[in-house]
Length: 231
Ligand code: DC
Image (cartoon, rainbow, N blue to C red):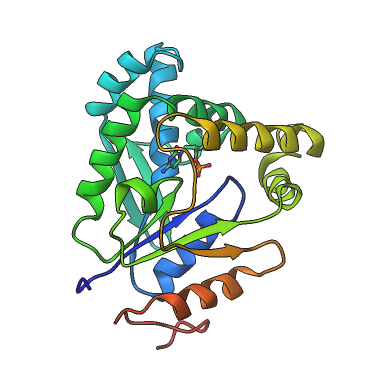
C-alpha cells in the first residue's frame, strides 16, 4: 500500500465522473486529475494547429510536446494549454466530439498516458477517465467504474449544455451513444472495467451517496472529511 493513495475512476460520458471525482478529492484530501480534459486540450490544440483529428501520427508528435497543466483556484481546477486558460474552450460539443476522435490514436494515447503517469506517480491523487485503472495505473490502490443508464447520462449532458447550445435532448442522446461506441470499440485502450475495480451505477444515486460508497471501499489511511467539511 502506498503512503499516499492512487485512486482511479473510469466510466462512460455523463456517468458523473467529474463531479464525483472532484468531490472525492475534496473529502479525501487528494489531488484531482481529469484525464478527459487532457484529450480535450489535445483536440483543441490540433484544431488550432490545423491538424485533422484523423491524423494520428501528426497528432502524436504534437501531443508529445503539448504543455498541459492544471492550476487550482479555490474549489476550482483550471486547465492550461501553453499557459493559456482553456477550461471553457474545451467543453463545447464540438471539442467533446474531437476529444473522442483524437483519443482513438495510439501515438496520442502514449503521449497522454506518459504525462498522466508523471503527474500522478507521487500518489495522493484521484484520476478520472476511461483507462486510468486499466492502463495508466493498473496497480492503483483503489479503482472504480462509474456507470449510469444512457438516457440519464444524456439528460445530465443536456442540462449541462444542451439548451444553451440550441440542441435537443434527442441530439445529445445520439452524441452520448456515438461517443460510447467510439470509446468502447476503439483499438487502443477501449473503455472497459479494470481488473479489481468496484462497479457503481449512479443512475439513482446522488453525488454524496456515490462518494460515500467510494470512501467505504478505499481501504486506505487518507484523511476524510464529512459533508460539513469537518473530519
Ligand atoms: O471524460 P471526458 O468526456 O472529458 O472525455 C473526453 C474524451 O476523451 C472521451 O470521449 C474519451 C477520451 N478519453 C480517453 O480516451 N481516455 C481517458 N482516460 C479520458 C478521456
